[in-house]
Length: 168
Image (cartoon, rainbow, N blue to C red):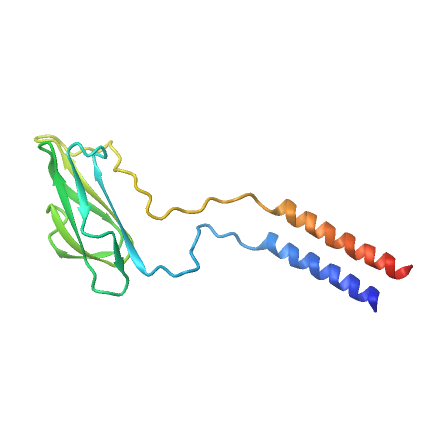
């Protein structure tokens, strides 16, 4: 009976440890705590702010409310506001994508970019907007395969040792 229990324990440990190897890896970190607000990320082109910048009246909106966000473009140094580019789900409450002040009701996280141009110039196309991380993804750590193999070998060795002890 002891022999059977030792072998069964070793087999269970090997299968339990190998389950980790075959488990599907998540492609993106997802918090176990549900997100209860939408994040608003505002940037501008050109990214150095030489022709203007933009601000929001707040940068988070609680989900499932009638919350709105007002975004204002602030031209500088004779810069001219040209348009908004909004990535995400939203409804326009006031203004439109070509007015310097717009109010939207988010239905997801939003990435908002204000575009400015020099007087009489064309809209910049080669300059990236300012980079502001809004929801960083955790980097993937090393693959624990070597650890799983070592633990499986240890479990197998323990089972073999137990069987030999029982036979003696």
